[in-house]
Image (cartoon, rainbow, N blue to C red; front, side, top):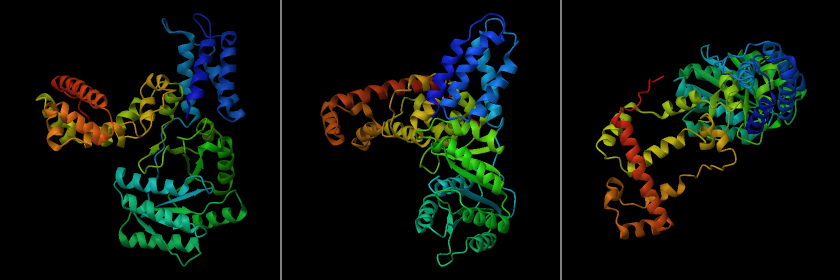
Length: 437
């Protein structure tokens, strides 16, 4: 998402020259390039101007630590100010209430219904709470059907009243239903429009007044750039929502909405979504996003994703197998599946400092493991359990069964042996311990 902005900001740091101190003279050109980079990323002009003024005020006269170049000092200041601009600290979703009611608003096509499903999955799995999804878009049957499908996928009940055209009453009835079922969280998916209109505003305001939500979240499509910020402002002026959700961050977006929105509407950005999968919802962390924008990676988020897939008992069994050199293709397949569950591979790589930039022009699709999985699935149970029995005739059969060449099979076997040797070495020295969160 921020690749172009990251490159332009890095170039702006190189402009900075000078020894000992950052001065108004040697920082002027750098700030000009930073402001231009932000505007090119579709950041609101006033926000970009205010931001660079804040950076300038903090930077001028800043003593440069010995062995730290002025460009590096500006990077640190820019990182801190970016984090402040985007909200400073993470703001969690408010789940107070019996039940807690979360009202979801937004324009049609913003990803509102999909987000409702993702939020339900997030609260169910990570907050360990019972959830009820409520279909209050009485104008689009497709929206109700979509919510039902999402509910089935994540194992969450969806409340509907197909014969009713009164979203206010549907929402009120759903809350009573949730109380009777002992469900602690109700997520109300409301109707959207192609543009902000009076009828829409009156309806969502009436629902809000009737259900008194613990939290009202406004969903915007990040791909609409500055329009997303303007729409959020219009909604906030009328609805006074509690937080913003940015969807479609995996699309062709320059990232300006993520940077501008907090400053314009003065409401926290709470969640970001970067895919269609139900587990692709992330809590927004301003500090981590600032790191990613500046090409510093986001190791903390990477570790958290790994921990979500981490099973302590399985890891203990795996360590024993590694030490005894018994790691096999079944284990290898399990590790691949755990990596895939963590999310988009290129996105994961971007969280490692320096790696994201190196892979900027490299296409890493979700099917990167497809050939490897096909080869492993073409092996017999005995071959997966004991790869050493795979002789030339077995290789030929595996290659034919998976639609690849014998060289491809040989390459995988070689990679497997290297991986097994490396993992045995790590296990022998003691595998790193994770703390369950």
